[in-house]
Image (cartoon, rainbow, N blue to C red):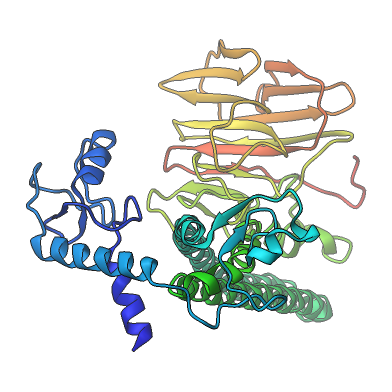
Length: 471
């Protein structure tokens, strides 16, 4: 019965000010607020939405909730009587058997008059119990809402991690199918190599699925702890003044342990490393089947692809599919740009690759620094050439746009990265004509970068290989 009363009494508090309702008004969505609180909220949010459910109110002057007003006034009187009630006879000092009449502000605990004059509390500050209890009770009232917000965040993370766990399974099954198809083309003598790669994939799937399960188990335990602390804090608010003040410090410490806790993060590398299993698959066995080998200098990383982008099965062609796919919000993935990166970054040597742009009329090709944020506007750390509205431009944040003079439409763009000379060169692959060169002091890995707003595909061109590959 006490639990029911405790839950019911929570309905007497305004969701905005977290205090007992004063002149409550009710919106059409049935949520109630203090009249002044609602007007203050609407001054900041002129759309006149409900602060709780965000439903738009059709009335600028909502009616008074008379029933709730009467209940709150009765509840306020009840609280006043409880605060004026004399202390229970059992609230005695454990050291001196005297009534606990004071609250030591330095030790944060109730004390008697003898304690006040003892050396233990020399030069300490005190408040009467009846003054301290309401003050500290008000302080503790803010924590349940903070814990509820924390709980909501953790639950949202749980949903995304569940999506990640499902995507690991999907990636594993999809990758396994592609591996099998490629190995079937290599005939029976490649069976051992095929089985080795399938085993590696399944081990990674098992390891990452186990890791995700462990993380989710840990998160669920943390959620349970927060829920328990939330319940305990709400129960603590209903106890008598002395008991409340005796447990106040411990209650706050329990709450702060959760509030100071870092929000759960999934860290990079949670998904299956598809590029490792599928990238340059045939090249890795070129010595046995040289005529069948196709080598791509850049393999695109599906874990970085913005959800509107789709990849070919060999991870070398990207298409803007328009319809957004449901994919995990992993740290590597772009969100604000229809972009994708190569699976490997470079900070040493020279590297080059061709991108077939053909009929695509809105694209960007270049390189991007490893530290560039994937979830926000990119303001530095990338170099590219891009095409839109029939014009070719070279761009980097440091130097801005430069319109390029191109006589005929480009079909393939060659990107050449010289890490030693600190240069990025773009050229027409077919005519070998230099389009633009950037010079910059690179301090970190640079990754191949492709962005497309058009539905026509962009493709990494293969390189013909022989028994001797010159680097």
